[in-house]
Length: 183
Image (cartoon, rainbow, N blue to C red):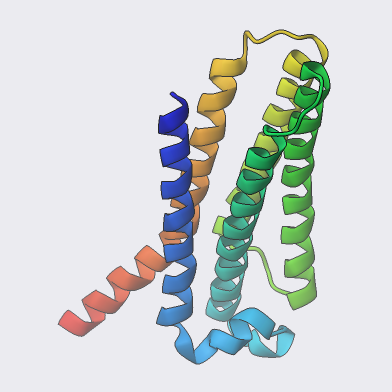
């Protein structure tokens, strides 16, 4: 089961990178604005959608990579078992909360409206934080592993859904572009 989760994690990370790169390459004329732009680059509703989708995809990619690497590092620490569990689940909970704050902050900094993808990513991160907090209490405080299988499945499922959500905008743009070329 662990090798499946590890393989799934790396696959999701690679596909998140592909989604971000696709947005950057497809909208190469907006490349600098996507990374460094502000309100002056947001002239239309489609600009807001592009920037918000990019912010969501980039933030998901970065936080998934950071939290996965952090989790891998934490489990190698030499600590008492219960303290390690508490530290691990609290850190994962904190990563989810920091993701939510970062997503809000980047949208506020750009003065960009939230795209449907960014909103769904936000909701998924809140669900992820609740799952992490539940596991912190169950496994870290009560030493009860009864929810561990559900925890593992929900974390993978939430990451797959996040990948699907950030991939919708680039896929729609690709299909639209192909249809315009055919017509």
